[in-house]
Figure 1: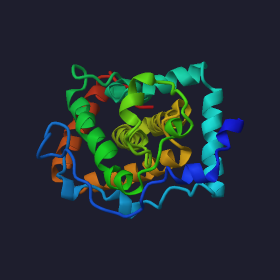
Figure 2: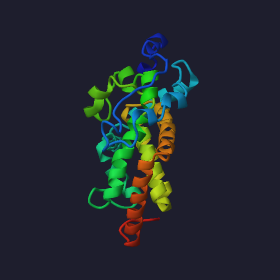
Figure 3: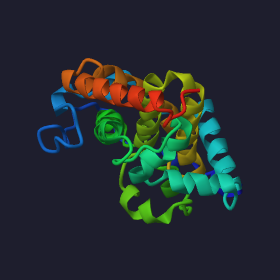
Figure 4: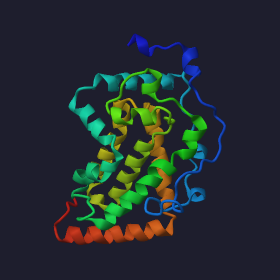
Amino acid sequence: MKRLLLPLLAILLCAGPASARVTYGKDASTKPEAYFSVNDQGLDSAALLPPPPDYNSILFLHDRDMYAYGLSLRGTERAKQAAEDADTKQLPKVFSKAFGGEITQEAMPELFSLLRRAKSELGSMSTRTAKDTFKRVRPFVLFNDPTCYPPHEKKLRKQPSYPSGHSSQGWGIALLLAEINPGRKEIILRRGYEYGQSRVICGYHWQSDVDAGRLAAAGGLANLHANPAFLRHLERAKKEFAKLAAQGKVKTE
């Protein structure tokens, strides 16, 4: 692990500026099928989250050690799961077993479409301003290592690391699904936790990126609960779930 002990100066040169500014991107006005909110209604994660750990801090030592631990898992079944978790298009499938039923367009149309819209807000919108503010370099870029899911490397090489949008998305969806099916909340939340840890194992994120992503997810979901369109869609999904549960088509414990 000698190569993990990079000179402090080289690491500091990779650090981005810490001046905050509002970041605009896709929202309900440009992609209504994927968002509930417009940009000005989204979570300002730069105002919520602390800066990422300094590269000469004790906290960064933990980040570095967790990255090394992730490397040690390459080639294992856990790394295979991490690679599968990297594809956000598979998010409903990822959570189906924990939720207790197949979350598909055919089986659960209301819940499926709810997740499609919510995941954009809980991932992209809830982490934008912090990513743009801190501009943290991803671990696989800093150490010039391959990840466990190469198809995303080129795209993510230039995108900021903190906080983790994947982790925010996964934890937020887990919180949402646990609200809909509280009888399986521990199983669902455990899967959401694993989803975030997959980003560390893959080498795409530092542990502190993942931890901050979970906080952004909680803030993003709280923000959504003040959105009338989200609340209406959530109520439809809950009624759909209740009907399926009464028919014995989904597990509730």
